[in-house]
Image (cartoon, rainbow, N blue to C red; front, top):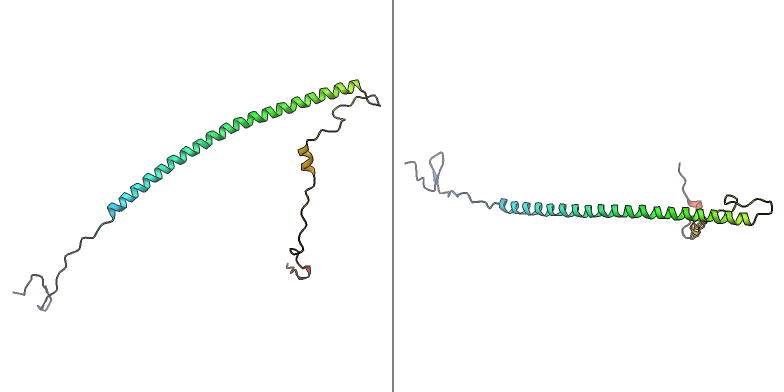
Length: 147
């Protein structure tokens, strides 16, 4: 009646035109692939977090062991230093009573010259800076001074 309806499109003025109607194409979905990539990345991130936790715990244990060793070391050093100081005082006292000085007083550790370690002497020495090369010095006449 109005025209052919199979595969044709009818216009308002009842003119028929042969335009094929295309069926919608099925779009390929990326959702399954993205889901797999997402799950793999989460699995790798979880493994990374577990490994970092293990490394941090191992470092924590190592720090605790080193702290105990350091404490023991400094306790031994302090005991050694106090024993040496006591030995030096006893030795100085014994030498002072056997050999009194000219004014009749025995020298005590407070009147003797203090004992200095080589590291203390080295730290007190003045550190000399190397001379500045002439090429690094600027011409003072050309220095711009701004306020």
